[in-house]
Length: 184
Image (cartoon, rainbow, N blue to C red; front, side, top):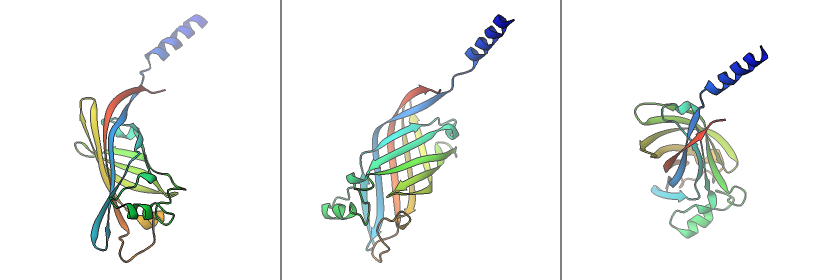
């Protein structure tokens, strides 16, 4: 009887399907922002992108997207402005070396369109943001592209200012290569 029970337990465990999660390795990333200053558009970027991107386009709700950038890499094309923005009043790079974006919910919309709810952590403050994005796959490579808007004052980036808009648009474009990882 014991041998029979052990046999059936072993067979049951062997026939349980292994769930695989598709992991995507970033190969190139662009993280940019735009804001109005004195009525003119100012654009900038961050480098140092790192990410853990687990995403199945057929089952996005099982995915997990986590991305970070290094605040010290801030670049607007004007050195004096960049130095000013790296100080305590704005990005405070000494105390807050990274900005992170972590998914808490993902869902499919139409075609290659998706919507995600993410925790954005910037300058020690974490808030939920909604990020519509696309995922376009060609073979074992793909592209994540999304854009969303935040109020910089919600994250204590600068102070209210007549010349500087409170609203910032953030755009992400991440090229990735597929890797399959077995779930545990």
